Image (cartoon, rainbow, N blue to C red; front, top):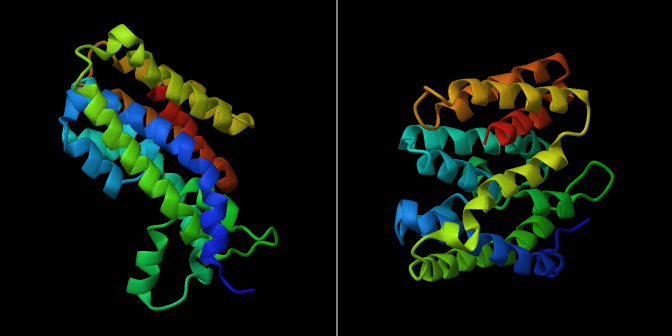
Length: 231
C-alpha cells in the first residue's frame, strides 16, 4: 500500500483547533517564565505538549535548565517504542529515516496505523504538518497575548498546569501497573517537595516507573503515569 501524504493532511485538519488552543495556553503561561522568544522556538523544535508543559512546570518551580530538559525527555520516553514500531516503514538511509521520524507524534502515529500492525509513513507525515503549524502558531498567539496579562493567576490560568496533567494522568492510569506507578510517583514528589530543589521531585518520582520492568508492555505507560502524577 502506497503512502499518501494528502490523506494524512486531511486526517490532521480536525486536530488544528485543539492544537492552537493548547499551544496558546502554553504560550500565555510560558511567556512570564521564559520570555517571548524561547516558548515559540521551543514549540518549533520540541513540538510536544506534554514535554513542554513538564519542562515549564520545573522552570516555574525554580528548577534549572538541566532538570527541565530531563523532565521533558522523560515525558517523551514513550516515543522510543513508537519509533521502533514505525521504523521498518520509513524508507532510505539513517539520515533520511531520522528526518522522517521528526513527524512522529501521538495522534499522527495513531492515524498512520493501518490496523494490521503496519504503518503508512505518508499519512504520519501529512497528519503532522497541520498540527505543527497549529501548535507553533498557537504558542505565538499565546506569547503575544501573554504580554497583555500581568498575572495569569487572575484569569485562573495558573490552574492549567495541574488540570493539564490530570487529564493526561486519567488517560494513562488504565491497568494495575500504571496506577501503582502514578501513586508511587505522587508520594515520592510530595515527600521531596518540602526540601528538595525545584524540579528534583519530578525527576525522582520517575523512578516509580521502574515497576514497569515487571511487565515490559507496561513500562511506557508506567513511565508517563509516574511523571504526570509528580508534575
